[in-house]
Length: 363
Image (cartoon, rainbow, N blue to C red):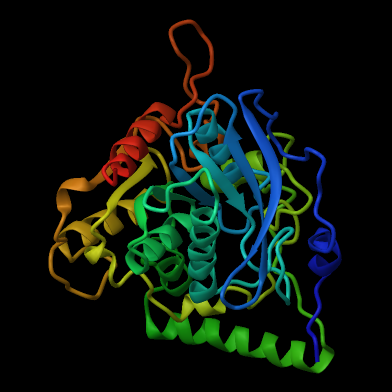
């Protein structure tokens, strides 16, 4: 029996990918763009947008994905295009079960398959004639920041990693926000709910969607929920293939994350890592704890105690003043410069410097 969701029809572009420009940001005249496809080791076809600089290439490449539940037409595409403006060949891709990429049922997630998606993107970039296979990095945004760290721990071909405004998806699904549901009783109650949903789906052949960003927005919503709404549900970032902009994951689509801990070996990452977070981000504690665990081998929220990182000097935690979680999706609009113009809060020059420094070490 094949389980179906409303998202199956909504994401039908996986059969015929869009060639027209359909991003939430304008195409830069400094880059060339084309649609690409490649398969991961599970046989799932992934669809990406390849951006190449028009004025010279440096042999360096970056794979980009995230946020968790978003599509490549949103934040990851902006990151990829902007880094291509700075000389890198970049690929923003839709993960398995999402957007234009393949996989059934739709809007399903897996720590294993999602990590493999990043590794498959590295495979793809390594085959391109303009890319030096020793000069490949990755950028993961929001939930894909944690997935990027997991990928970097698994694959030494990844020479530099940026985790931007990251979530640890295993921690938040297993423990709740700020670890408020970190108990056997709370997890058991959640498991009972998912078990009932699975039985219902098995009997009906249909999956129930859990819903994307709440709409309409409650007046008493926390600020970070308001920030999500401002990005995903308005013209700023809405896209029809984005789960977060529409009906979200199905009700047990993230079950695999709730029953796993997948950042166990990030203390062994030898390549360069930059974790950047907004000062005011509700998610900041994920990045700070991951950085501490990665460097020292122990941190709040991590039960394991590991050896300190063998190469701590190329690890960095960057806290961006006044920035919220979603400000690092597209630059944000919350801070003004002296001339009264909005300041882009993503440190693009810092990212260029980080990748050029760490990928050029492989000359």
